[in-house]
Length: 205
Image (cartoon, rainbow, N blue to C red; front, side, top):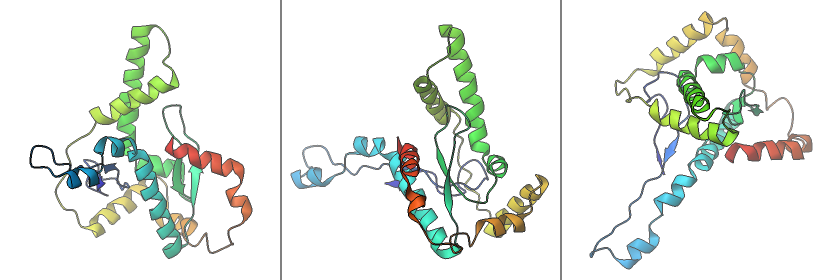
């Protein structure tokens, strides 16, 4: 598995966690050994698991943030039928997340256009399954070339702080509401009740 979207290397300057693309080292042809073929991962199978791999990565990232900074992650309900449940850091407002999700906004606009065109063509509203497929199509069609210019992290951090302030958020207050949360109380059985398990499982459907 190789990261297809490393942090801060998309066409957008917004901070994002990476997505993953399966890579294959399969050897074909008369010189490929049986051993090499037997031990090569099937990229088609891996491709089907990209969502699970991405969520697994995010889970590991949140675990590390929790250990280092005392943060917590929570499940956020999707805002529409074309979105999935998502894990976000507790203490970070949805409005602030949307501000730093310009890529998602582009996808939403294109998905809305595709859904409208589908409805006009078929004379009815598409099902949720069709909407999800159209959103996947929008995700691919709105991809832009990566910006290979290296921007220093301190410059990015300053830009992000300025954007947060311009949208009415105090960076220090956001930080204070986000870190040291998990150090305030121990984990209890209520944190992993049946509803939480079912909702969390929905992240990788």
